[in-house]
Amino acid sequence: MINLPQSIPSTGLGEEAAFELLGMPALQQAADLAAPDALAHMDPPSAPIAARMAYVVAQANQNLLHPATSPFATEAERVVLDWIAPAFGMAWGQFCSGSRLANLTALWAAREAGARFVVASADAHVSVPKAANILGLPYHPVPVDEHGRLIRDSLPDLADAALVLTAGTTGRGVIDNLAPVAAKWLHVDAAWAGPMQFTCHRDRLAGIDAADSIAISAHKWFFQPKGAALALFRKTETRASITFTSSYLARPNSGVEGTRSAAALPLLATLLAWGQEGLAERIERCITIAEQLAQRLEADPRAVLRQWPETGVLNWRPAQADVAAVIAALSGTSSAFTIGETPWVRQVAANPHADVDAIWARIDDALA
Ligand SMILES: Cc1ncc(COP(=O)(O)O)c(C=O)c1O
Image (cartoon, rainbow, N blue to C red; front, top):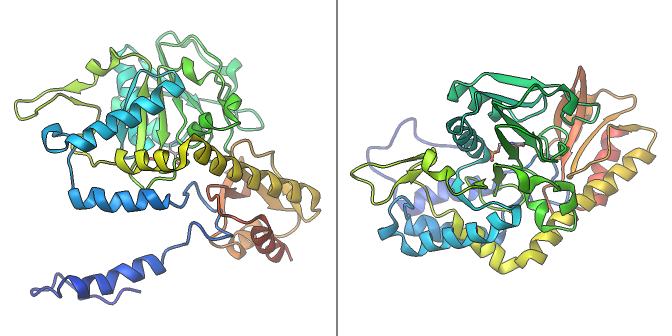
């Protein structure tokens, strides 16, 4: 695929030649996430304004660890956090490179607040048990109901626990019941569905503002280039518990990561360019795409719809044909998810440019 020397060339090829070898092929040999039939994973196409700002960010190469050398980007980060955190009832937050890190950061704060073990549903993202493991906390998975929602009646005593609820599970996109619950710490992993708070579907996230912390991936439904997520916290006092200082630091370092890019700038630019309405319109379109496909699948005797898509994640399988063969035929437009022993086709409406007819044509072909 890539025709390159076997090792670092002793004499460089020059920037033009290097770009020629890598630039266009890297674009051309990548799945087009904005294609009319792209609907495979929780990977939206990035907002064009965000891609442009990401170039500026790379050019300036600011390190937000050093506010004196990144004054504009530091201010931009403060502004975008001030715009987003209050919408979730949170007092402050910080950028992370992904929700894996945001979950780890939040559970670190939970442990510092006295949580002695972590509880989450069996359908929680793998980063939750991973974070518990890193933090040396026992992990207690709780069964899910037939739709994939955490069964509250199965919760242990949470007086010493960090409870993680998920808003948009990875496999089925369901939102756990977010109603407040008595726990030492309540974290909501809203990596996927968090931005629905800015849409007409915000009632589906009712209760999220009672959380102690929330993780949201900006590179999912905020349409950002990869490497951007938010860890949000309800109480400002939390910050001190996950902050370290050092003689070489101009200001204390909060959270797991240190050096970080100005990922806030592309997000700020996107929110400025689109406004709340533009963001909502794109997410709502994604949800409508999933719902329209669900309607067609429900009406088609060749397919079995697993459940109604709550946050744009579809699970279905062919009534007769082999699921693996259908997934292979849908290559690039679907992924797989297993519920119990049963494999299901998974399609995630992360692409607001998707066209229901174009996707249906692929499904129709795969089922033929
Ligand atoms: C529910 C959930 N939590 C956490 C993550 C991890 O997010 P990230 O990819 O931003 O690290 C994902 C990723 O898909 C997810 O679906």
